[in-house]
Length: 222
Ligand SMILES: [Zn+2]
Image (tube, rainbow, N blue to C red; front, side, top):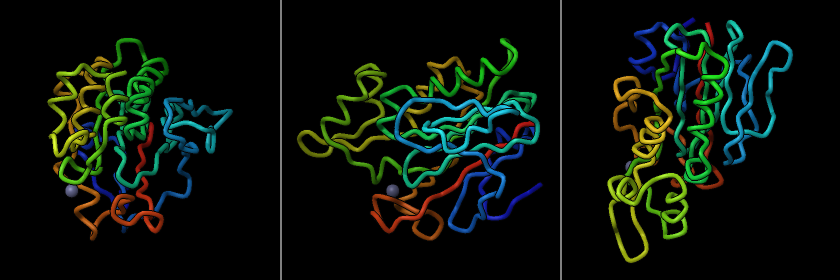
């Protein structure tokens, strides 16, 4: 079923995998199963017996036919992952805390466990705060060293003022996907959509603070 108000990614479209990255206009699927997000690295496995909704986690994986799983974001990075045959999908919520804690690697590993060991995975990165708008301070940059080399961090950052830099969270997510064994041709970010710049399409915590709504993203297992 096509749903209105959602952005789609060609990597997943090419495999006919039902999915969507939310905008202000999207209606959240009523049957969507999503965890209670806490900026950590836990993964929920959504099974036939236990849907896993409202468990504390920042990634959710399933292999149940027709099950839609998802995450909410307002600047953080949504990542939708699928096995090539569409039987097995995962949704990941990655902000700087989750990235540092390894949520991307944990989400991909959980999906691999659900699928055939040799399953080829594809991953699409949705709308998120861009390097244009995401300035962070030293503690955030230091946290990234838990997961990335200094050279990798430097490539994903633009220095601004002493102790501060603008960070490309999507670039770090792509590195984490690579670290997880997903081939470069099998992961890509959706254009340059920045949630903070584009107030017409997206909610943004940086821009709207407590008043910010949330974008819902989903992917459905075949
Ligand atoms: Zn921006």
